[in-house]
Length: 112
Image 1 (tube, one colour):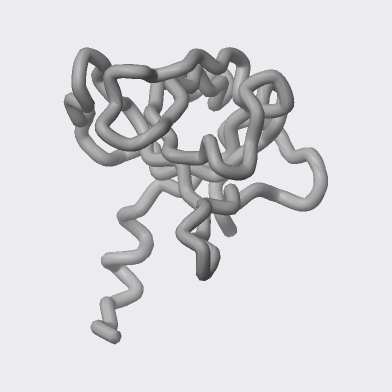
Image 2 (image 1 turned 180 degrees about the horizontal axis):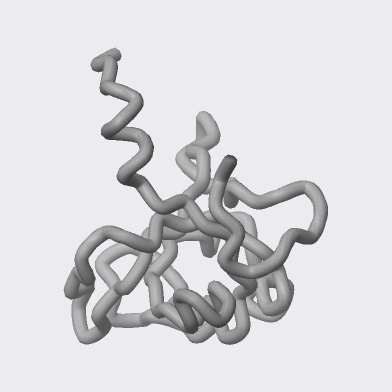
């Protein structure tokens, strides 16, 4: 494992947002959803692609808070431009479990 300086970690903007819209993403190479996520007034709404179809149905994701990196540059993923990176953990079977707060916090809250 590579170590980083504290100053490196401070540069990463890990913020909480609420998923407000989920769409199928058939153009993706691996099964994925297109998400619209509300990060509050300071950051606003961002789009992302997330490969979380193994464990989550689209309708159950709306209204759920997640943790995402919001200060990476936008990345073109097929026909969509991803504006943040939704975080999660891989299980042994490869499925991704979302990283999320265990109780509600304000959208846009930064990881402490």
